[in-house]
Length: 408
Image (tube, rainbow, N blue to C red; front, side, top):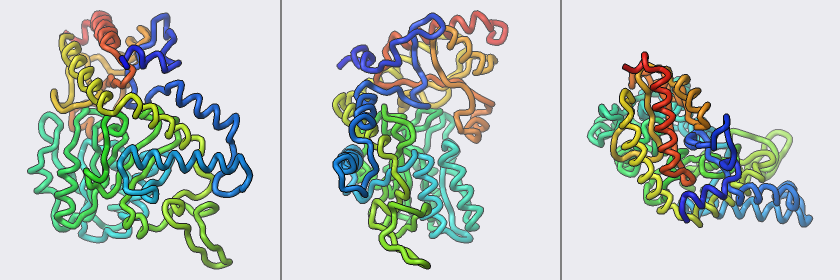
């Protein structure tokens, strides 16, 4: 299916913004939703809406089947070993915080090390700051190469026998760089450390195989991969999840409750206290069906081709600075246009119907490493076309004309 045909499946894209056909280039923040996902949510609320795992009535049974059916789809989507390894969460942020609070705090102590990178989203940085403060562990950073990539020799020197935990983003939401997380996991395991992968950006664009990566934990969000907001996934190796204590307590996650003590359900339900995110899971399942029908390999090929085309066209704009590597990047271009503030760039582009992101992208340490207060970002997905890139370049030329004094 051609990107132009895929685009027709996304109702929100068939509109005008400020008198221009919408060009949506902010999919790294959140993707748009195809009609299949919208219809799945509509059907659930119109026909199957009920709580799960509780009632024996027909609606309850249908809702439970849909919810647990979505979990089975996630198992297939990332090649987990079993449904016991799939925890539904509110998103990547919640998943990382769960691992940090329940697992990392229990294994880290004074003198231990937690290793991350300067390119991490705040969601994969602040939780580890908090673990370090609470346990006395030391937070260490794998240094970045001049283009923002990671060299394995730096990984080798940063991870030591004192390292207890490593957490690295798979695909950077600013640099677009694809990190060698499989190799990093091997180095971490060689030193006896556990490895988490922030897959918020990679899961929508690439075929993920957690068994091949051999990561101990993997987290991603539904809303960045054509699914609804408010639903995410934590994958964890079964033996690690079994050893972890839940951090939310209440209904649904319990086995037996006495007046002074309680026991927990088996995996995965001991981590899903309260009424779970039922509709979100249904929508995520529909999104997985949609992406698999298109084909993850086809999506990856399209993203690579479109990113290369975007780099080529955008670098034709004199005064435009691109951040991150020229190769080995996926799905986005982060840039500044001379001395024009990125918010001004985004405002002019929005007047032309073009949606891009401007700001620090929840990566303030990385912005300081880049020596920038903020950047603009154009991010692409399966529904974008070369015509969208051409519109972006035209918009940048108009921005340059408007702010010519600030570009030189």
